[in-house]
Image 1 (cartoon, rainbow, N blue to C red):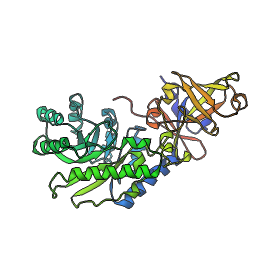
Image 2: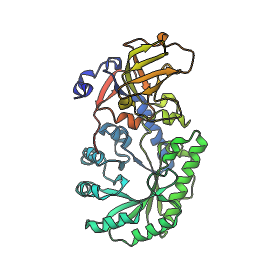
Image 3: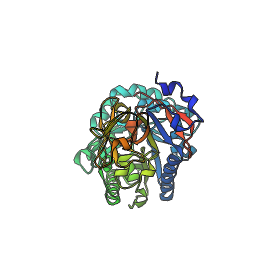
Image 4: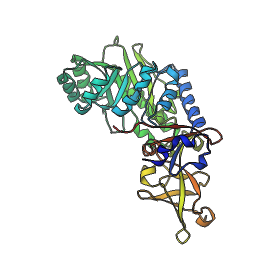
Length: 385
């Protein structure tokens, strides 16, 4: 068993500097501030909010994102996440529809049918074959979002396409589905590097879902769901003429944590990053001006950002994780600083990661610290698919 998980309660009340390495540390004051900031923007706009639970995958952060029941729906990327959230259904905090975040496929349907006995489930479709699958399943009708591709080229049917019009017509005729609305995710907005780019992506999102909604009668109540963490950061600039039959909701998942990818967009700062990885220096190599830490691919991932390397050393901005192998990370610099003057064997270092969702997935326990860097809680994430 993972040593940190096996002994996690013993670290509560102790300084983060005493945690085993590598460990994932969550700065609760920063995380709360990030969540509150987005909640305030959503409330000011008067739109709905559907948090994505994919990043930290815990009851604790999901409660915070739901604001104690002010928001009552989520999106989940895995069946495991939906199962993990079931206690919130029993608590009465989660009584709206849970959106399963992949286009529906036969292998997931049986589990979702079972889960639907206890909670309302909403599905994504982006192909007429999805309607075929649901019609042949013999189950009760499903509420669906039709997913649009607005530039990320991941999932979704191209916005403003003939194929979209045909899918809408097919779904509207089918007795197996009820069109709840239209959904898009601007995943490509992570590559943006300015507020202007984020705002343009936000404009594309809202115009695409509203154009899709116009394919249905104007008296049909619909929800249009937009968002990605970069566009969520600028959601206060949302400007559109919303028809009276349409309700707008925002979805986002990474926003409580942030990471170097988010900092790269220019929309948040270093101090808005709520998670870090504690690692330890295992070797120092003056001849090549590098050091070795015990956090490699498995702890940090090979995700990239606008910064070079695979992580940055907090407090030492000239240094980065420049190479990785499975359990090894190599610290290096392009500047004139010397490794022997910065690192010693046994020294602890804290690393910002490129993508908090992927990094968090490597750890079996998250150590949650207060403003004094004292561990106050240990959160256990849901694992599996």
